Amino acid sequence: MDLVAVNKNNVDLESVKMTVSYPDGAKRKPNLSQDLNDEIFDIGTIKKGENSVQPISLVLFGEKGEEKEFKITLDYKVKNSNAKFFKEKIYKISINSSPIIITATYPKEVNSNNEI
Image (tube, rainbow, N blue to C red; front, side, top):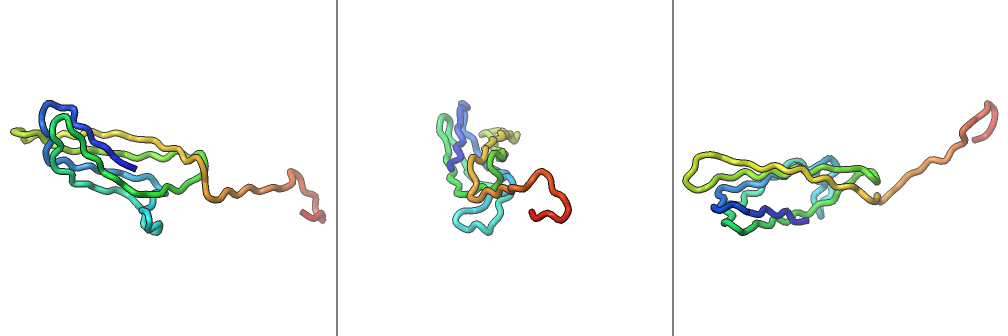
């Protein structure tokens, strides 16, 4: 997955940091034992009209049909200003398949001394 920050401003963005808040069930690829929580990418400068691409490699675990939310925050400054700015966006991803699905089949009614 690639995260792309596009600078549509008339000035360069400086001291750019991208923070990714991962949902529960996000694991680092190829080491699936590592949980992902928050990760900060120090991008530096994005010139006006240009973009920065940050590749991330992960696997999402969850139930089929479950919706997961990623929160992406971009913190930056502009030249000749002490002000800090940020842009925040939430992306939703739905899990469309699971590696294992367990379904229980059982009778609706059971009487004592009957086998199930």
